Image (cartoon, rainbow, N blue to C red):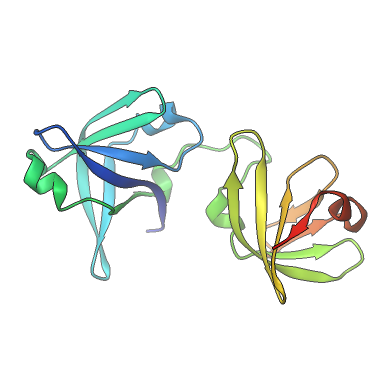
Length: 171
């Protein structure tokens, strides 16, 4: 099985074992269809049936099997929740899971290797690629004309060198 991180447990919510989450999904409604979550326990992944998911504005709350009081919920603070890839929300055509992009080589249209995609930051309006370079990090938005080609099978993303100069920053 392959797993995707979907949320971090922030804290207990109330006294009945409900957990407040920081979600990593773009659309909170997609989160509400999750029926099983996983947590790492040593080198293994342990599954938990989801008993209830509640969305309130920008917040998500979950009650999972075996967690029905505040003391148990407190032991789960700061743990990461995962789902099985097969249960992930289906993608539209020309979309990719962020997990599949991490680690791809970023190459400009002149053939220069710029670095490796380290993170994709969702600002709420635009996605920002964070690239690990030889000299630090390079940040750039996925703005029109920047990304020319994405090829997960070949392990690369081709970007426009001229457009990249206009929109990127080195950190």
